[in-house]
Picture 1 (cartoon, rainbow, N blue to C red):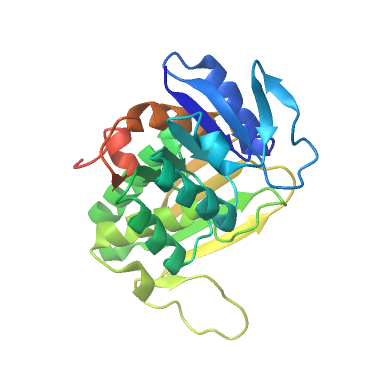
Picture 2 (cartoon, rainbow, N blue to C red):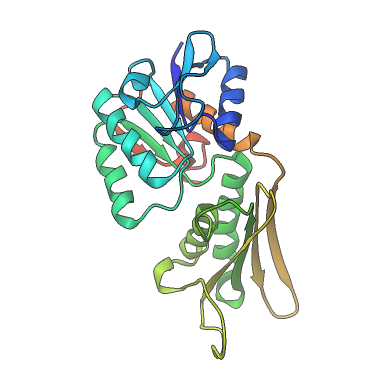
Length: 262
């Protein structure tokens, strides 16, 4: 049975990923990794498995890794995974363009799925958003609002950016030419075809995204609300099951969930 390395095993997502692995029929926990200096290093968490800070040793025990950490930590472990030939499921967000390019380079050596959100329903929302933008056309203004817990480091969320890309794709546009992330002061009228994102932070919100298509006298809202992280973890485990044994490539999450070409 393929074994999974959980990167950031003691974090919020790491704990939920470990729980999801325990319920999986086709995978088992192989190793657990944390940052050097973490107070739980050396602590047993399962039979024969202790929290480690050695990526090379942890990867040697596994066929696939699941990672929801930080860009720098992710790339450090992903480089080691490329050396070890270990497949990689990456849910980390906040990468720079250069860092995303490096992930693409590493995918020439190992199979990788990198997605901002592994929830099946969020990926359905992404599909719906693209189709709504395509069907509604230019007569509706597109705005997105997202809220996450107070500890989230990056803004806007990777999922919000992915949804904005879906709007742009549905309209046949390039997102960079229309994205609006800030509004303050005397800004004038809304630019034609703008795609706005507003980010809110507070409390322990697991994640909520609202896509608004605002017309004259009506609006369409597409909403996803997450009350736990469990569905993100289950989607990542499902992706790991799908990814093991595949050829090196950077695979889109849509292929995992059967949404490509729809």
